[in-house]
Image (cartoon, rainbow, N blue to C red; front, side, top):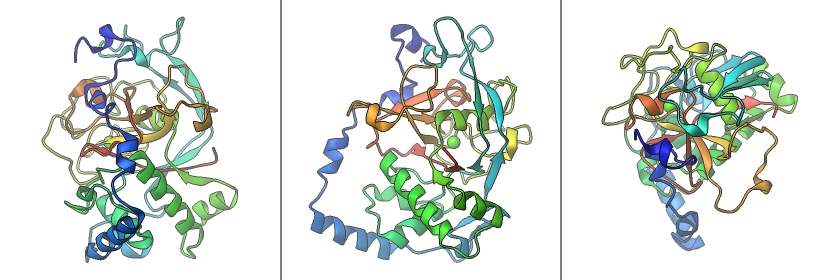
Length: 315
Ligand SMILES: [Ca+2]
């Protein structure tokens, strides 16, 4: 790991590098449409929903039992994005803002982000409701409270669109969220700027809890994912859990050089574009769970250490 950034300006963190070879096209060839439909039905029928998971509600699509269903508002305002290697000795070159500046300032309008990574229970509720094709069945195995893994970027997008439609049609949606959705906001994957501000707050800290690595604040360097929220982090901004570690989290930002440009859309990209994932995972060391780390992965990659969380935002 230590020499990764010196070999190639576009070197990606170790866990991400292994993903680049995954072929989206190959995954598209998995089975015929008829077989896919049968398979989706079988998988959905086989899902046994938990009778009770603390903090999760079957009547709210397994969102956390909180007033805003686990969404936390991130106030509007600027934050410092990227890394200054004179301050953060573990910084990768891809975290540098520009030729003349190590870090940049990004001013974001307010948005909401999930306190937790999307869980196995939440993803199972989505599959059960929609018959979404589950390519990697490990996504639905394991502890219901753990973050869903084995999901491609496209699976994460499908989940976000389903939750968006479901919240819009639900009479019980919290008024604050219903009002935002009514104003044209949507459930989406976060941009990498939205993700990074939520992870490090506005004081440019290196990890969500501060400037020194702490093994008691996040799940990294371990053997597997933990139930979401297992690690208390009173110092973490906005009360969010597992922004560092547990599982990498898909974003809707393409993996491109800084400075961050929020207006870049998919139509601008080449077919082989990678998408940014953030936060590192249980498989990583302290370097890859820093708030500014940027991993790049093929959108078809399904791995046991990649999951996601969602935002509600206007843009
Ligand atoms: Ca995470």
